[in-house]
Amino acid sequence: MFNFLKGFGITLKYFVKPKVTIQYPEQKPDIPDRFRGIQRFFPDKCIVCNLCVTACPTDVITLTGKPSPENPKKKVIDTYNIDFQGCILCDFCTEVCPTEAIVMTTKYDNLSDYTRDPMFKDIEWLTNNEVYGNYTIEEPVEETERGEEK
Image (tube, rainbow, N blue to C red; front, side):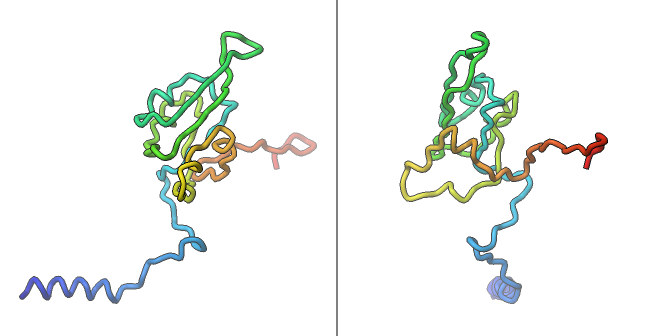
């Protein structure tokens, strides 16, 4: 009988507490600093080393490169795709990238859909993923006439 009253007391304690429900589309939840969402890709930084493809435990990343027209010893990125049907957002691809060409963002709201086709993201979509989350893009500093920063 005492256990029943103890459990009922816990229920009553939560019954009188204020609710913490948020109205999702209008209110966004507070995202933790270490949240791992959809990746963002910077093709100009990529050196086509294939480390992200090798490190991916689910083999959902495809990367192809072609020889550079300026220097045949270097490669230029041709295609970069991620299939988010199998991606577990483990962050391995971003950790092994030597040039930080792929980073994790806090974007999460388009990881579900009614069909499978939108889960396949190509290089254009991953590059235009503007929700940059906890990372910052360094913007050039404007200078005044005397060379001082604003």
